[in-house]
Length: 169
Image (cartoon, rainbow, N blue to C red; front, top):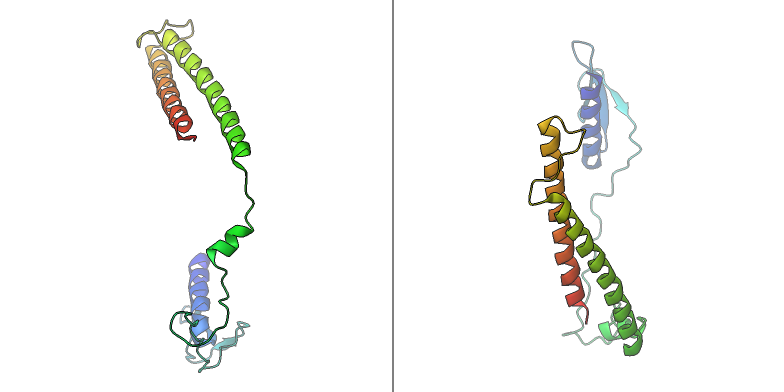
């Protein structure tokens, strides 16, 4: 009940930006009622919001530099001016970074391929060896399903690594 009246109060407060006056009234059952119109004995609630002046001056649109006769500089820098301050990396340094990245990704690819080979060997074409704690067949099936998921995840990782290595210049 309290949450509902709190929600109503919050929604009325949101509307306060348009009306700037909120009244707290009590209905026939003694429950609080929040409204923007005064009905009977209601108390004005101070929301701390003062309405803006009714007629505020419109904000002028920015001038385009194409048609007017004004020669004032544009506030936004041109792309070439913004790029001149951007840090540059020379080609030999970038090539070294790319080579290092390719080496790291190659190492990750080899580790993932080794992991996939081991997973497939243990998986044994969908019939891995049963463990001692898997007397219940459901436990065995659960482990087989998780192994299948791990193999699929490893295959996707290998594909992503190969794709990433191919994207390096």
